[in-house]
Image (tube, rainbow, N blue to C red):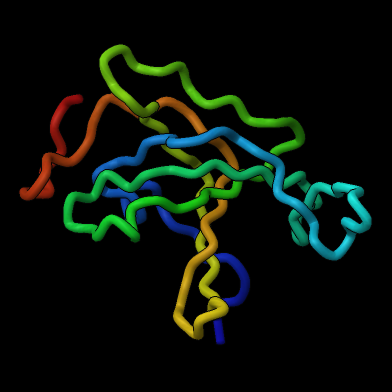
Length: 138
């Protein structure tokens, strides 16, 4: 099979309506290396970079409440810093570059996806208008 490992994907394909940071950037625990209260941060198996994660809310209005929040893992040598909050918004809009998805079967036997990124930043000045799929200035 030609597809092996993480599958590259664009931000617009995975978050066509954008997304918002709804928590803090935290280190991901390496469960195999951590023991007896000793925390070891996970490293990406391919790059060796430290792995961080941030919960984000998908702005797609068609998603059910339980589907809206996902964790995006970020590969970086130091803890990534989210963009500055936007006045008047309860959550901080974010975009990711260098995205990949890795499908897997979760504990309940359902297909799930691990989302990884190389960079987190403030959104560019465009987003899709709800319902019509056309890009508009933000």
